Image (tube, rainbow, N blue to C red; front, side, top):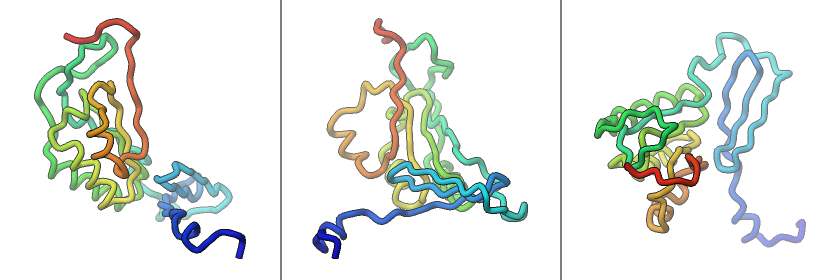
Length: 164
């Protein structure tokens, strides 16, 4: 053995590679670590090229409680249906899309945001990310999202007030 106990070996998560083929070669991606490997010397027949996008951004809702000068999203209560998004995620996952990024408005204002992230992480192999202003991420939300989100982007517009 290499000096590690069987418990230590079991505690290390196994890589779960997702594969995507294109004219560039074979792309391997591990959503847990974010590791990307492109095997660009492997020729891939055109019939095996993924026709789905590598990454998809989904604006879940137009709801937002800030008024940032740089934001292009209209402020309204409009939002996508949960069942529609679940169908999209299943289709994207099946066609070798590597990740989805939720945005909006403010995605944490989407009524079923936590449930959606949990579904995506549990039922697909997509990497889950979102862009947020960060004002609603507290210890409770962070705990509910633990294990379901792989990357969070925080959008900031200066140091002045941004409330409407």
